[in-house]
Amino acid sequence: MKKRYFFDFSAVSNRIFREISKHLYRKEIHKKTSELAKKIVKLTKLEKLTGLQFEDAIDLVEDIIEIQMRNLEYREKLKSEKISGEKKALFLPHCSRKFIDGRCKAIFDEKRKCYVCQTCSNNCLINKATKLGKAYGFDVFVVPGGSCVEEIVKKEDYKVVVGVACPAEAKLGFYRLKDYCRVLQAVLLTKNGCAGTKFPKGSVKELISC
Image (tube, rainbow, N blue to C red; front, top):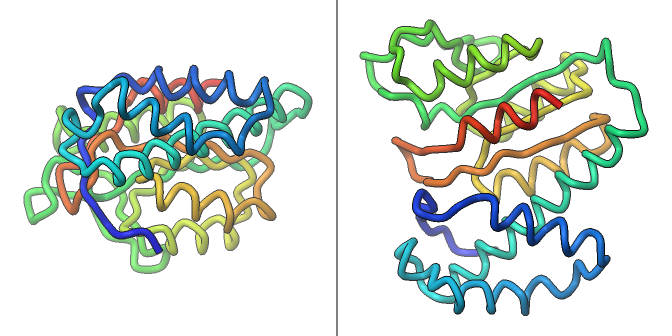
C-alpha cells in the first residue's frame, strides 16, 4: 500500500494531465505511464511545485494519468449510449467545505451518512458545486468518505456518477462501482488534506454537462 502524503497541485494546470492521457489513450500505451511520469516530474519539477518527495510525485502523476484515462474510456462510452432518464449523482468531499465546524450549517443525514448543504456561505466551494450539480439534474451528496459513496450508489441505484476525490479514493471508486454504474467520472482534488481541500469547479461542470 502506498504511503499517505499531502499535496497541493493548485499551481499546476490540470489540463496537462488530460492532454497526456488523451495521447496515451489514442496510442494504447497505458503500460508506459510509469516512465512517462518520471519524465513529467523531471521536466516540470513537480516535486518543488507541490512540496512532495520525488518518488511520491511520480506515484501521484501515475495515479492522475490512470484516472484521466478511465474518464476518457467512459466518455467514449457516453458517445455510443443514451443515458437520458438515468439517475445521476454528484459526490463532493466534506473536507472542501469552507468551515468544518459549527459555522457550517450543513445537515448530517444519518440514514445516508452524508451532509446536505444548506447554502450558508456564498464563497464556499461545496455550496457552489452543489448548486451546479442540481442545475444539471444531479442529486448531490457531501460525503465524509468513499464507503458512503458505494453504499448510496448501490442502495439508490445511481447509474451516472461523478465524484470529487483524491487520486487514491478515485481509483478505489472506479474499481468498486464499475459493475453498478453505466458512467463513472472523477474530478481530482488539486489540494488534499483533512480540511481546506480544493478542486476545480470548472472540471466538475465539464463532466456533469456532457
